[in-house]
Image 1 (cartoon, rainbow, N blue to C red):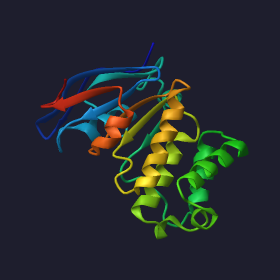
Image 2: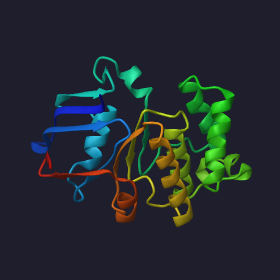
Image 3: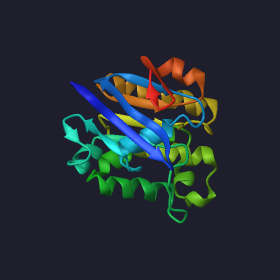
Image 4: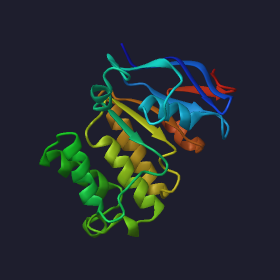
Length: 213
């Protein structure tokens, strides 16, 4: 059974066709890299899948859930991390983790798991108690990334998630994702960092002129 199925996804901006009846599917435990030049529509594709950008047509299924008719159930099993995660400037990193845990009805054990993952990425107690307005972009990406995985999702969607992370943290994040794969987690991601694609991807998709190849 496919974890993600996208059927005839189309998106038009100001008479320009960005996505032209795009079809893609991802199986259980499969890591797929979405490639394409700047402006090809990679972020638009991922945002349409997440429901963050309104599609013009097409169907999106996450596991058995239709994103149009069962968006809450679908999003409960997805983790999403963009290049620039949205964070409240006057909440700490730890407060964000607790906020996200509350949204997903997670328990204290899950929060402790998230803290451990953040510690593994180099964010200690002092960092986690500081307002995110004081964070560097790399620190913000770490919070956003762990926020997308600490609930142990079935599908993880990543849009250039490691661009500002140091090499050690990036390597650690990659190992985290590989450990999730053993539990059947699937990933769709975009990255301009070739070494990340080489380490993670089982399969490559190319987005060009609104179509997937």
